[in-house]
Length: 386
Figure (cartoon, helix red, strand yellow):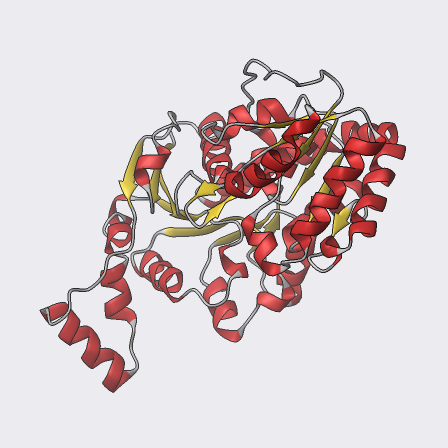
């Protein structure tokens, strides 16, 4: 059984790495003889994932101006409103591997949250045209993200695996019957515990992750997070470990966190974790924190899966759905609008401290079931090809 993961733009986003790494492990553990290949937009960043059977360059390529392909694409688009030929050429690095595969897994968990995706739609059509199984793996999609065109694309899939109940119920409400519920594979990812850095307080360190993505959506949030750091330093004796989780150009957590570090390092209670760790190493640090505050979903999954009380900044449907499935409510999840309110941030942090033991006990009860839901994804995949 040959499986190709696609719709992945490289592992400088440690959340994307976590999905590939944990999904590969789950599939190989539960599906005898399965071979897993990855088509990646940045294949050089994925060499750290050792269990893959092959990594392909899946990057998009331009069509050379005035070439035969360019003229033919132009004619088809201008005269017939047909993008298919052009998109096939642009995404040929993925398309050319379809004939060799049995299953194609679209793994970008939230790719469908960012407007129309004509390139992915075209790849999906070609997978089905060649009689291969097409699976949307561990997705989150909001009601606001849906369109008629997207719905038609989703109907093509042999199996859609929603990673939380909000997405599951929304897709079912649209009439889709190819949808099953699972949990994000990253809940099952292993961790690697490196030596603790100087200044880390065992059992008394709070992690803080913040992202340019969230900051750009709400520019005032940067000041509110600064106020939260000040509050933690004034009212507790904890160390704050600034924790990057995405380190790619133009979307680099480390750059944002470094500014906070420079501002607060004089306190001797703020440390900045390195920018070059892999997903399992970040999880190793996060697992030893007392609390975690995070904007990146997979950084919060690393915390939840190790029973660390967690506060989520700038929720999306995935953050809301994951929290709801763990706690039965959207516990300590702040919206993109709320995170510019310093008083709201501080209030939620204080709530997390007050309810520390209650939250940890709830996680200890819920997470084993969530991990079982991660394994359900492979059961559904296996059943699809029986």
